[in-house]
Image 1: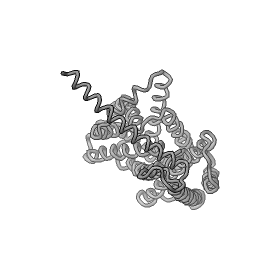
Image 2 (image 1 turned 90 degrees about the horizontal axis):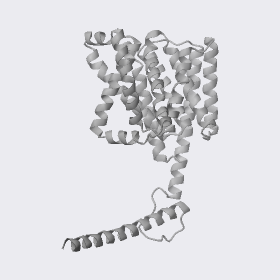
Image 3 (image 1 turned 120 degrees about the horizontal axis):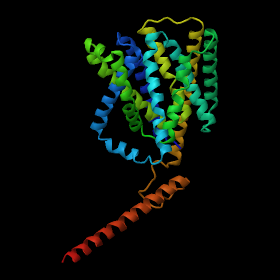
Image 4 (image 1 turned 135 degrees about the horizontal axis):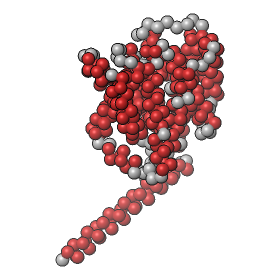
Amino acid sequence: MLTTNQTSQGTIAAVAANFLYSLLFLFGLLMQPLSGTQVASWRVLMMLFSLVLLVSVLKQWQHIFDYLRTLKTPKEWVLFILPTPILGAQIWIFMWAPVNDLGLEVTLGYFLYPMIMIMVGRFFYNENMSLLQWIATICAGVGIVYDVVQYGAISWATLFVCLGYPPYYLLRRKLAVPPITGLISDLVLLTPVVLIALYLNGGFELAIAADKFWYLLPLLGIISTAAMSLTMVASQKLPVSLFGTLCYLEPIFLFVFSVTILHQGIDEGGSLFMYGMIFIALLMMITDSALGYWARKRDDRLHGYNEPQVGSFPPRRRLKNRRIKGVLTAHRFRKIRKYQQKIDKMTRKIEVLHSK
């Protein structure tokens, strides 16, 4: 069972990650004359560089190596490496699409992707959905279906996005891969590929020629690393359905940036209707999450199992079973610690006698 604290942390991480992802969508245009493929390749390198610095500062290398040593069988290694090309492909299309007139198709894919995650959580992980979640999902589905009908078909870029990310996160979840470990392993495995790509398509020469890349490239790595790390933290702390729901924020941010910064117009029919339905669905999801949070907080306060009373034993007033278990555990722990101190004291005396 996920605690209220985990849910709150996961929600904050998911919101921040989606905002940062939306900022990255602009880099494909800011970094011209680099092509979308070249920008994606540089993004991988900058992410790896930034993440290596972060792990070194936080002194987390030992945790990464400790996890890698837990992978014993070939099957586990295959499951660990299998998501890497999925991530590489998603990085590529995200940076490539805006400069190749496929930004709308990719945005639509990000609208479809959370719906797929919600269905995965419901039918594969047996996660319950409230009435508001069902209504919100239906509203979002109606908006997306209407938009798809207006365009006449689903683009390959749309399917590439909405069907690509769910397997990545589910495979990482299956092996319980720590966020930083999974991300830095993916980037290390992708580095030879992007180096060859930059060498063959002239990405190094173009980046050196323009002064703006001296600050845009490091900024690209910092934002990318922060976004991916926060996304993986959220995927570990949140139920699959809630994690998928919060992913609606990214295409909404993309829509806002496209209108206000890129000055791109939208069709008054299909796209406007779709975004309106998505906003309605998002408001329903936020309301449902807030109601669930308050309900869990009230239950925690009533049951008291998060902060068991250990000042007096046994407490006079009647408590819930979980609280009683917490008090008993704390009481046993104090007794064990007391006996351990006596044993340590006797051990030191015996060592002194042996030394004589």
